[in-house]
Length: 104
Image 1 (cartoon, rainbow, N blue to C red):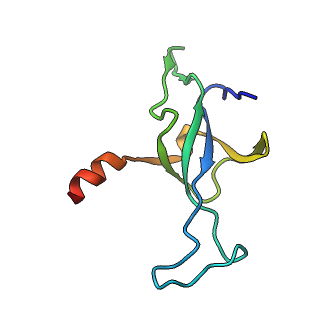
Image 2: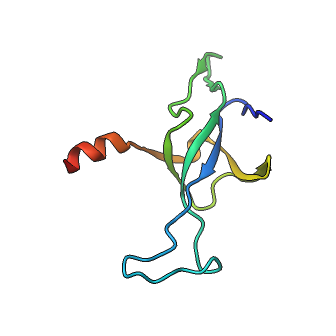
Image 3: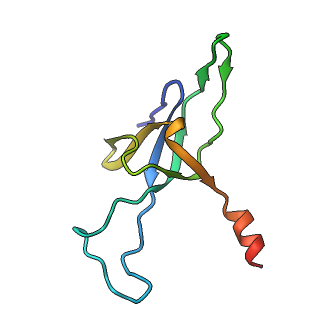
């Protein structure tokens, strides 16, 4: 099944958090917080401004993003738990290439 969000909405797959702390303590499922990081699966065409012009979204499929703790609506598609949220709920895009270059 394919899903196409409308307007300025995006479809996000949560990125699972580590199950161990830095000290090696395993965190049980009941104590874990839901991750606030995800991967964009699909995006809508964009929103309209006051003049009626289509404003494309800044995020694209494949981007890793950070979003608010209570952002989005949880849905289940093809047995997978996903989130639908507005682009305005996204706090930022994680750019892995830039972080890797700084570390080198």
